[in-house]
Figure (tube, rainbow, N blue to C red):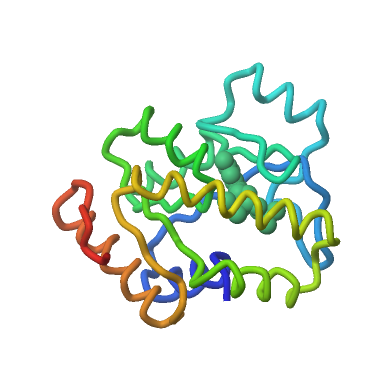
Length: 182
Ligand code: 5GP
């Protein structure tokens, strides 16, 4: 299973965790709800919010724009929670510039073949989108060495435990965790 599943299981394991809902210009998939999966914005509204400085970070990913609203992160941080952003590598590296104490965790698919199998298996992407997502995943791997921690998402239970451990260490020491996993 992919990153989305990993993050939902993490929420069960670490109940107080804050998860931001991102904004995107991509179309909702069947079953996705506005304000729950994402805030689905049209291009004009996304532009307006970029210009108003409302984004902590935003990036083009797979041909659409995705971004974390400052208000989302600030609301959760004000509650005293640890906050997890499930975002691409451009976003991760941008967040680090604003929050140098952020811990960047790279979730690695077990292999390119397995990633392709998962993408096709979930049946939400057309052929062009599958190809674009696979090419992006390869390009993202180049950024893995810049991340603080790498977790291979081959065994879901182990990956969730490793992620929970990263958060626990962060909450205990208040600082980045370096190479605790791999
Ligand atoms: P999907 O279209 O499959 O929901 O998401 C595609 C990718 O967009 C995700 O793998 C994630 O890395 C990235 N993404 C989702 N939300 C954000 C965000 O707020 N900012 C950035 N930079 N990337 C995001």
